Length: 355
Image (cartoon, rainbow, N blue to C red; front, side, top):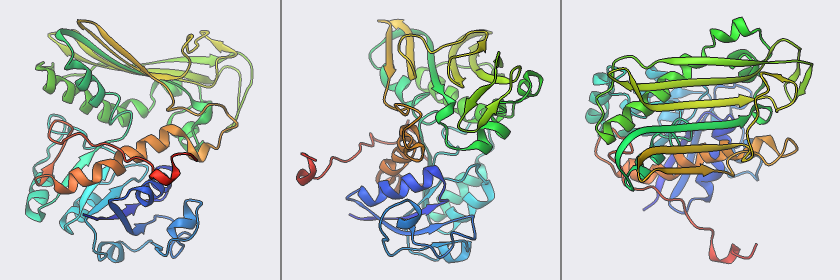
C-alpha cells in the first residue's frame, strides 16, 4: 500500500521530512504547505536541496487540504490547535513532532478526540526529545526490569550546532542575562512536551503522579566573549543552561527529564562540560537489574558539518516519517506509543548497499 503524504511547513524538520518521505518505499509526497509566501509555488524538491520532484508548495490552506492525502506531517515551529483541528476535520491523519505525545492528563482533549473519531483519523505526537528519548526508550528498557524506583532521561548538547539564530537567542535566551534566562519560556514550551513524556512513562509503569511537576533552570555564564555561529556571546551573559522537570509520587522524584545545553565547554562559570562521553542522550533506570544506555550519533560531529543536515533534526523528521503507516492504519483518536506497534525505518535498496 502507498500512503499519500502532505508536508506541513518547510523549515529544518520539514525539509528533512520531505527527503525522508521521498526515500520511503511506502510513501508518496503529494503536497506541501508553507507559511512563507516567498516559497509558495516553488518545487518541494528544490526547497530541500534536491532535484525538482514536480510537487509545489502552497501557502493556501484550502488548496493544500483539497489535495487527496492520507496523512499530514505537521511540523511548524510551534503548534496551533486550530490548524490541527482543521486538518483532522478535513479527514487527514496527523503525525507531528510539536506535541500530543500523551496529552490526556495535562489537556482537555475531548474536542480533538471527537474530531478524530468523527473524521475517522488519528493524530500521533513523536520526535526525539520529547517524542522518543524521554518516553519511548525508557518504556522499552523497562521491559528488562522489575522494582523500578526511578527513571532518568537526559540530553547533553552543544547548542552551537543548532541551526536557528532566532530560536537560540530569542527563545532559548542564550546571550541574555541570567535574570532574563531564569524566566525562560523554554520551561513552559518544553515543559508541556516533557510533562507529557513524564505522564506517559508513569502510565506505562503504574505510578500515580502528584499533580505538580517541579521544574528548575540553572545557568552558566561566559567568563569571556564566546564566538558562536549565532554571533558573539558577551562575558557575563548566559552561555549554558540546565533545565530539569520531575514527576513525583507523594513528593518523591520517580521520573527526571533534563537537558544540558552548552555553547561549547570553554570560558564557562560554573565550568560545566559534557564529561568523557561528549554529546549524547542518556536513559537510566534505577531498577532490578539497573539499566542504562547512552545514545550517540544524534549530534553533528563538528561545527563544520552541514547544520541543515543536523542528525538530531534528521532523526526528529524520520521518527515522524516512519510512523505514518502505523498511524494511518490505527483506530481513530489520539494515538501514542502505548497504542501503536513498533515503527521501524526502512533499509537502503540492495543496489545501494555498497555505496
